[in-house]
Image (cartoon, rainbow, N blue to C red; front, side, top):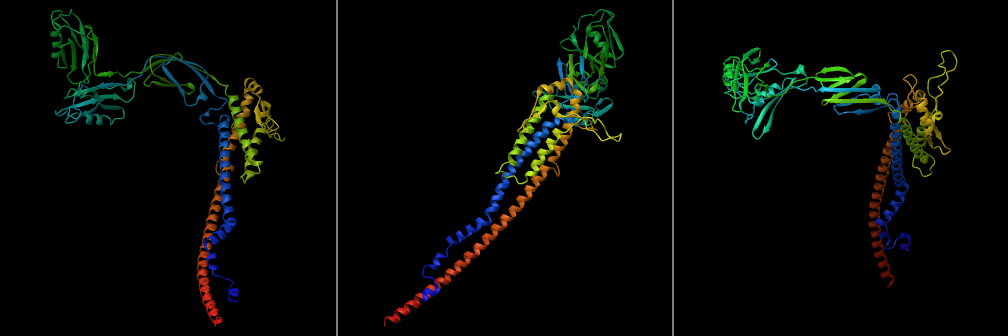
Length: 533
């Protein structure tokens, strides 16, 4: 009778175990948590679909850009130019190819512009002091650079403080260096005038390219004019004696080296200027490695004598000369790509249209906001069916405004019963050839009356901009995901907490039941003992 009242036998406590709790929890989880997880999974799939459609919208945008009046760089499908060049003496370029004038430009380069470049004699220690003589210096274009107690690198660093000069220490061999001094820019206006005081770095060493025999007597009345001073042979003195006479002049240091070459320097370290050379010595500064000179060229018969090798002529054609020679460029309008570019747009739109239609009419689609996708497609289609061109009546006479009569379908655009668009290339190319201006007005238009491409580019570009259809859709998905994540966390934590408490309760119930069972067993034993007497 006692067992019937309690309703629990010896095994009842063991039935309140974790397995029962897990079954109860799983059943409740299926009703509360799993629907949220399913929604999140669907949202992820929706995100993939939207991302794919977004890329296809971008493809449509990229495809319509060549038909935009405000295309970057000013080059659209209707003002493209093609160029044919000959020769390699110059390189042709343009910042805005659309502004280039059609026709042929001929260029004949007779001289390349170059910088003035000097080098010192070689030295073995780039960290050595140049001069210990007070007042030693190099003077470049009137600016003095002290060499007194200065290393070559220190002098080069000082020279480099000038924006018009460039100096460097160059390794020209094993343990062999030179200091190289250059004008920053090319052209005769940037020539360098260099003198040396107190130390000879070899910047103004003039040496003959021809050789003479020291003991030979040159003919009489041969003149050599140096910096305005003329020295004339007398027919009796030897070459050695003649050069010694030059050396006796306070303004010059002159000698004949072991190879029979004449070396002449200015005593003040300046440059030697040779204006007459009857002896044929051909004196040149061996360390003046490049002489500043201008570009000399004829461009379409016009003479150019300029300091730079880059010349920009009318229309923005940039001509960069690289060597002596003849070159030409022929520029003409290029209409060949218009049909190809429009076909590319049609293909990109068809791809987008099929992707959106697949989501709109599929029962398995995870897309929630189908109206937004329908609106994206509708906006583009409405532009394709719209009329463009100048209004036949602008309304100023009081009568209703009449839109332009130019329509894509009048120039070869076609659509079949499945909604697939295509281009009749024969009709389109005929318009390119025979009705170019109207076709351009249809696609490009003007700032006052924008064409199809210009308007559509603005519309499609805005779809992915602030408050645009695609952007708004993505923001909505982000908000939905955030809300679902919060719900999932809340329901999961609530479920875990609930069944954690239940497990604790079951554990407590088990203890109580076991106590009841123990007490019942004792009672049962007492009853059996009393009845057995």
